[in-house]
Each structure stands twice: as structure tokens, then as C-alpha cells.
Image (cartoon, rainbow, N blue to C red; front, side, top):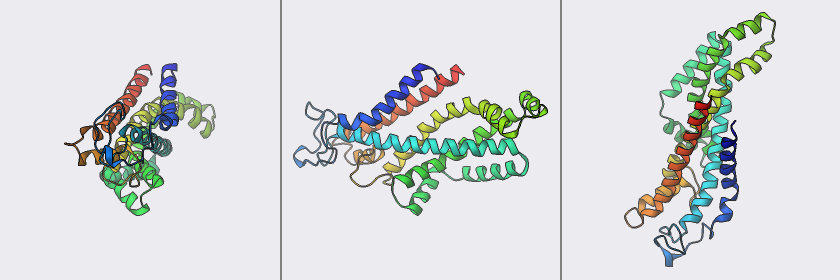
Length: 258
């Protein structure tokens, strides 16, 4: 991976780790004397309807949101990759069963699947991660399956089989290696989808505990006071937009390099 991408990933990781330390005040502190204060030198991004500092909530919420997004995207990528490669490698009945299940899941709106999972498991970080990952496993598995089938049918795999290479060796050296560029590119795209899904769940009140900062929750809070204080919802909305654009840019650059 190019050093520029490594630097970008380090910047994101650094933000997740140190962002809360940069917050000027406690994001949970309520100040009724500063309700819906416009951006100023005291509150750079203003305050919300409870007088809480928007910048502090944005930074703390960013850590919470990005950690959940990273965990969900990683879980979806790992599970989807294993499922897709298994379907492409074994083929036949196993591929047919996996393809049928994936097609059935695609017929159900992803947000509905996430809502059902959270309703069954209850609200919490684990249920949010599992629900978001489950939605992304299906497209991930389909994309990896298509690439795995191409790799399985490649001449170098046929040659490896003729030379007596073990199935594990072929899977690890040829199939997985052939799918790796697609895995990395789709992983970046999937991260953006996971972030949007978690934001949507937060907006619906399903992705966070009351009062705790989270970008989707902040969007919902901003909707309530849109006319009185547009900055309350604008800050998390802009943060989500630029994060998704940055991740998609990373995926495009990596795809061009490959």
C-alpha cells in the first residue's frame, strides 16, 4: 500500500484516539444559559438546545461513530470474504445455496434488517455493530464470490492443481491473492456504507443511548431545532459527508493504482 494511504489511515486512527482530548468541554455538560448559542469564540460550533457544546459532542461522537463503523466494516469484510471465496471455490450445490441466501437477503431493505436485529438484541454497541455488519455481508460476499470464480478458473490455478499443490496452498497463494485488490477496494467503500447506516440508525434513535454523542443522534437533534440553530445538525452532517467522501476517494485512488 502506498505511503500516502498509510499516512491517511494514521491520521484517521490518530483522530479517533485523540479527538476527545481536544474537546474544549465535557460533551454532556448542560448549560441552560447558553441554549442555541451561535458559533463564537467561546463555542466554536455553537451549542445545542440543551446548551451543550457542539464541537465537544462532534469530537466525542466522532470517536464513537468511527469505532463502531470500523468494527462493523471489518466484521462484514472478513465474513463476506470467507463466504464469497467458499462459494467460488467449492461451486456446485454449496455455491447455489450461498447464492440463494444472498439473493434472498438482497430482497430485504438493509435498514429493515438492521432495525430487526437491534429490536431483537436491544440497543447497544454490539447490536449496532452486528446489525450494520449483517447488512454489508451480502454485497461483500457477492463481489468477492465473482472475483473468486474468476481466480478459480484462471490458468495459473489449473497449473497449480496439475503440479499437485494442496487446496490450502491454492486458496492462500492464488485465490486470496487474486481477490485481495477487490477486497481492499471494496473494504473502503463498505466503510462508507457502514458509516451511513450507523448514522441512519442514530437518526432514527436506534444507534445510541440517550444523551451520548453520536453523529446520527446529533443529526436527529439538529432536525428538531433546524430553524433556530442550523449549526446543530450541520456540524455532524458535514462530518459524515466529508468522511464518506474521503473514504471513497481512498478507494478510487487504490483502484487506479491497481
